[in-house]
Length: 427
Image (cartoon, rainbow, N blue to C red; front, side, top):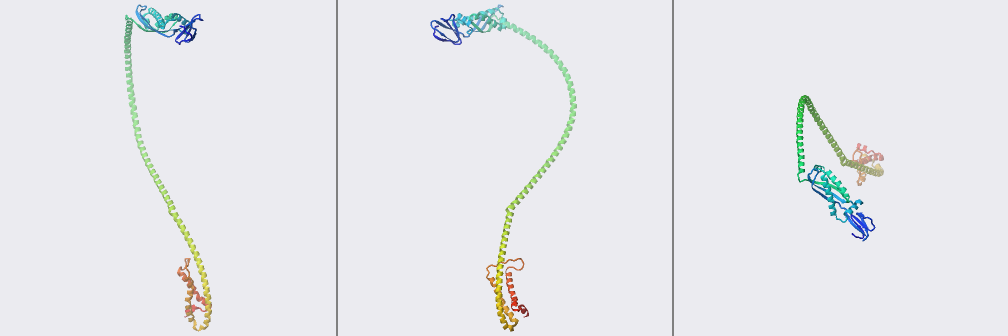
């Protein structure tokens, strides 16, 4: 194949360049190379792994028994070893992969037949690994000389047309069956012997066990009787203790219930006391304190009013006293004037005697009383304060007027020397 420039190939191929500049072909497995046209030539050789089914029908073994064998081999041209690749190029360059396949298959089939002829059927049948190893080693030594490597070889199948393998199997089967029957009989014998020994041991163990059981039963009954007595005693004690405890518990429950009732009653009393205190405070707040305040206010108002009345009464009394003294002074002055006049008349009236004087005095007293009471009749308001002793009201006022009138005879006596009272009693 003539090309120019760079030529490449895949990893499953190798380039073989020959011609100018090369004393021997240039081998390039899985790469590229520059090729000069005309003066150089480049070819490719496949490095693929080839699977070979090696058939060897009716081959006589060392015993003269014809058998057929089928093997499976994996072979390929070795591209990593330059010497083997060069040998493969010498042998197969220009051939296609099918031709290489046939050459390798024929070589392997010849070696497989040779190994079959050197071994017995039993060896091939029983030791397949040994057969495969010998074929692999013998075939590899020849194929290497062609540049081919045997990757693997496996014995796939062994068969015969004469029934030798079947007979061999039957003999082996019979042998196995015989051995099985013998083994079974021996096993049965051993089993029966062992069974008898086991039965003997079982019976001895059973008798011994029965004796132990009887003894254990006796001990059990004795202990059970003792335990029953103890249990009944403990049960009776437990029942009594339970009843006692129940009674104590019931009593404690009743005491606690009574205590609860006492506490509840105490709480009720406390609540009632609290309620009474609340009502007392409420009464104080809503009734007593307002009443006390009102009472205090009324007392203070009464005291103030009383003080006001007293002060007004004292002022009025002082005014009356002043007016009375003024009026008395006026009356006294008038009386003195009249007395002087009467004294002058007395000289003329000596002959009338005391009866005339009494008569004149009686005529004069109403006028004096009227004069004394005249200021009172013009007063718009009179306030009188009593200390609790003596008369009060109009009676007191009348007393005051009469006291003033009763002083008139004494005044006449002081002025005239005539005792009107004695004159009246004498008359």
